[in-house]
Image (cartoon, helix red, strand yellow):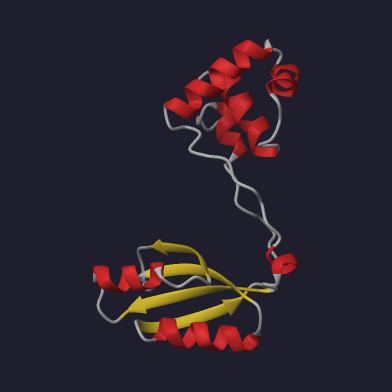
Length: 152
């Protein structure tokens, strides 16, 4: 990856719907050159997809939480399969440390949250924290893109 690829990634992170012409103006390349570079970034897996950012509260899911889970049966694939079947879970990560799994979830009410906690707790010991606000949302460290990963 060169500086233009990093600039394109940064621009696409800001606006994944930007046209090639808009991106070309931002990075000072031609639109065909941008199209070729974006296609290469997609083909090599650097860009793995495009998504919409959804305001969960506006679709009826105002309560978001983080759930830590220490599985009763650590490493049991059936437990991970069961977690994958829970629609309220928006993210689920196997991690090192005390909890085996850290998840994010979104629900419409406290009653739904209680039902979710009860379901998750069948797999082990859980601890739930309600998200009040988010100081940092999902992002790629832009410093890494700007400096080619080298720390100064």
